[in-house]
Length: 116
Image (cartoon, rainbow, N blue to C red; front, top):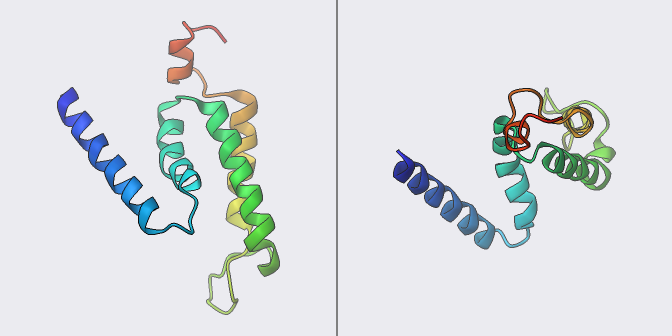
């Protein structure tokens, strides 16, 4: 089973780094954070650092791209871009996770020996 898991991760990382190589204008660290961050959050591993990183990424996205388009997303297709409502949601969730951590069933807690 572990061999299959390692093969899948090898393919995922190969695709990830190939994507980062092809799209040089897109920062590969942002891509890795957006791709691997939710997987780590789902597992409850490195919850607080990932939450802080995603929060910082969303603040940057709001400030540099989405603020000029207003609050709401472009549901009707009439705006020139997307608003920042989704990014604000992710920012709020990131703050909650950064303050509270992964919770009872997280790998963070298991690795810490059940201590809080």
